[in-house]
Image 1: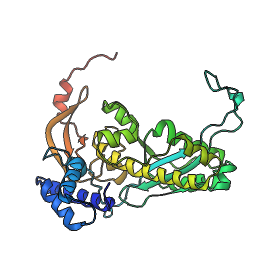
Image 2: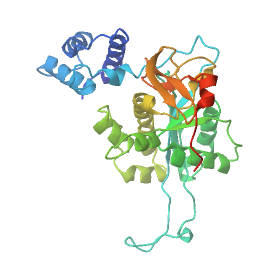
Image 3: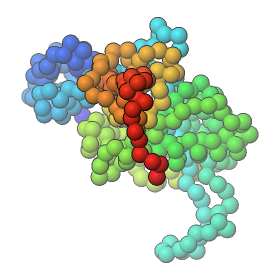
Image 4: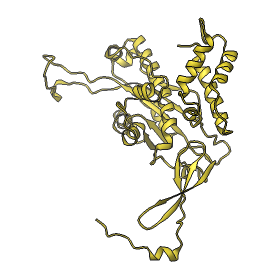
Length: 341
């Protein structure tokens, strides 16, 4: 663990991104020396330079050219465009389901064993492009009374401003559970938004041993994981209205959002079904990140009867296609296709 870690990491992201834009190789030794000069108290004890170099190597990878992890996490500035897409990183924390049981082993817990449904402890979120992490959490009285109406309302107001919501296991957990609490607390359906479920992306595109967010960040992407939760006891204490536990839960929730944003920014170029930012902004830009800096490739994308030029984004590396058929109308008429299955 190092001191001023947040500031050091932000500087590294900026430094690597700047070098990447100019197609310059990252000199990790030079970068480590710069960090020591700028943040002299960050690494304590002997061998500060070696500690700094080890930290940089672990963060950026052993290969001298492996600077893409942070270089491709650049967030596009939409301030000069007609519309700024609102992309919300979201995570919610819910209570366990309480049940009355007679034993602990090999027991089927039926619906008749429960009296109350689950409720929401807290939510946390941040907008892409904004460093501020915000949210809401129950107070002790609300937790004891299982009353999440206040924090459901604050979440509802935020969701109504979002064009896109990013969450890990969004489609099976965060989004349907969020909507249920809106329904229970008497709110009408929120305004339309699109969803990016990072869990689905990991399952579809990659072969990780585990797809838990903490495992992916720590073991696969080698970026900082979230705060330890001290196990189920934290949820139990929150359920009984422990004020300290609720504060810890909210902090855990907030750290989840930061971890999720880093995860999303690294994998977004792989999200083939990403909501189209070109459509949202009404501009010719990368559908995944919104950058106007992209290049035509020598590849083409083919459907059964059409062919489109493929482009690659120079900001996030996503690939996408043009909308104009690359085949002339006369040649297109000659194309024969298979019968439907």
